[in-house]
Length: 285
Image 1: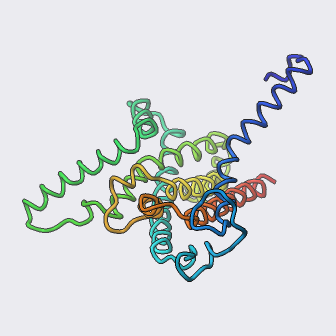
Image 2: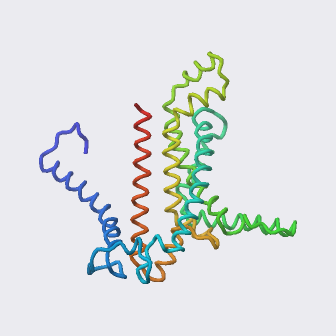
Image 3: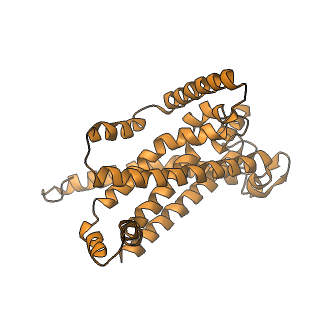
């Protein structure tokens, strides 16, 4: 709706109703998932059997809570490990990419930028298969030539990190580039005129300016890594991240413990998002 164009009262109310229904449509499934995390039943469905916290803290079967489910706790640790590496790599490479695309002009820049965006439109399954086939071919060639075993090129956490990094870096690049485009280069020039080195000017002036975008891209990278399933499913080995563990348990039969995990993920994601927004608002003051 365009604010500058006058609208009838019916149109305004219809638009507001549409927006309200849209957000209800988005939030209702999440609310249902969260509600059944407290249902005193072994099945996450109606009828409602009463309120319980057993699916979080329970210790006796069948009410074994998420905080006592070893497989889930281990998978959360694996997902945190993967997310930390993916986030660190994505932020570092994304920052370098931002300087490359915003500050420099060179032949083939448009083609390189398009290649950087390509992972956004490639399905995660196709991306995972491509990485798996490519790394396996390299591993086979190296093993035939040297007689050594290259575990890092076989399905496992290194390939999961590489697969997630390959497309999450694109998001980090876009977020940091958008911030860098707002930077006034004259501030760096003033620092250079005052005797600062090129790296010193970037470290003391440009990077602090980019810090909100760097933090935001790190948060986005962590969240995207935690929720990724398609690419991870193709590249995972014996160590399963959280999404794969939840999928395996869902195949055996859904229980409210999965609802409890989902609720914890929703809360953690909301906290990270709010912290990122608070940091950006503090920096903008």
